[in-house]
Image 1 (tube, one colour):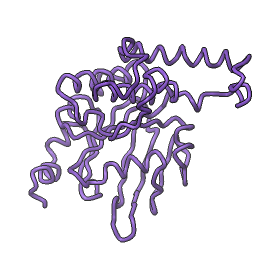
Image 2 (spheres, one colour; image 1 turned 90 degrees about the vertical axis):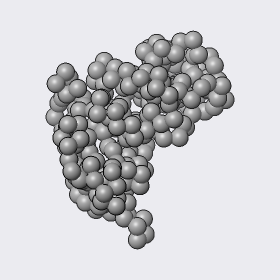
Image 3 (cartoon, helix red, strand yellow; image 1 turned 120 degrees about the vertical axis):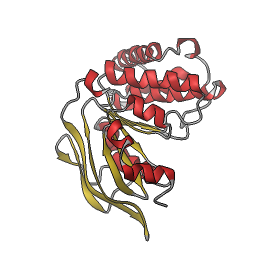
Length: 262
C-alpha cells in the first residue's frame, strides 16, 4: 500500500473534464490527479463513465471542456500515438492481441515506438537494424521472464487460456516501457488463482519498474487491496476520492453501490 512505496509528485492532473456524445453526457466536471509511482483505481457501477475516462487519458476521446496536464504540460488534443510516445500505455477490456502470432512476437510489437532504424535497413535486416532488433529482443525476453511465461514464448496466443492471454497483453504494454500504465479491467473473466497472479504482477510492475498504474476494476476486494487511492464515478460524475478506507466509508459511494441513490 501507499505507506510501503514512495509516492511522488502529481504527474497527471485532470481538471473539470466534461465529455458528451451528442446530447448524452458521459463525464461531467470531473477533477482528480495521479501521483508518480502510485496505483490509482477508478471504480463505479456499470455505465459510470470509467472507460470513457480511460479513453480521455490515452487520447481516444477529447473532452469538450476541462484541462489535462501531464508532467505540468497541457495536453490539448493529444491522440493515442502521442500518448504512447509520451509514455502512456494501455491494456484493453477485450483482449486486443494478434491471435495467430506467438507470445514473443506479440510482445515485440510493443517495442514499435522504440525502433529507430529506418524502414529500408529493417527490410534488409542489416547493420544498425540487426543490432537494434537484438537489443529489443533482450528487453522482451526480460519481460517474458518477469511474467513467468517462458514456457509459452513460442506458442500462438490464440491457443492460450484467457488468463495467460491477459498476461501477454500486460507484457506487450510493458514492452513500451511506459511511465503510466492504464489497465482496463485486468481481472475481468479470471478465476481466483488467475486474479491472484495478476494482482502480484501489477504490484511487482509498480514496485520493480516504478511504473505508475491507473486501473479500472470491478472486483472491490482487489481494488481495496492494491490501490493507494481510489476515485469513484457514478453516472459520469465524481462521487468519491481518497484512500481505500476513506472511499469504503463514503456514504455517497455506499449508496451508489447498494442502489439507494438510483
